[in-house]
Length: 65
Image 1 (cartoon, rainbow, N blue to C red):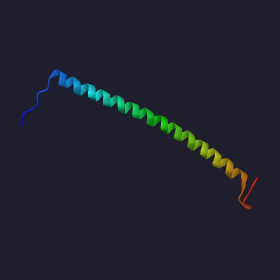
Image 2: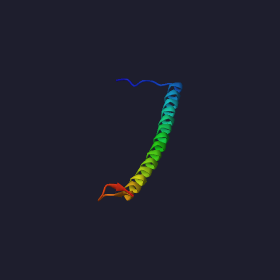
Image 3: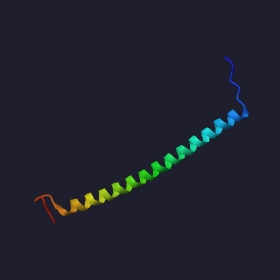
Image 4: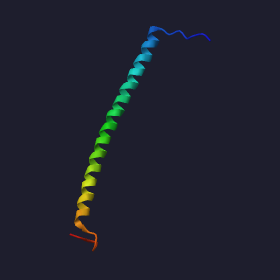
């Protein structure tokens, strides 16, 4: 099976395409990191609200304080 012959221009095109793909992946990872930070913040807020809610409930009577 003969190996394909690549010109310098072909190789440069391949390398620049790979670089574009790496940059796109980097952008996606940055977006995912931001989304994770937002989710963590929302979860913390929800956890705090649940704790506060549980503190206000009298479980014996089912009434709020």
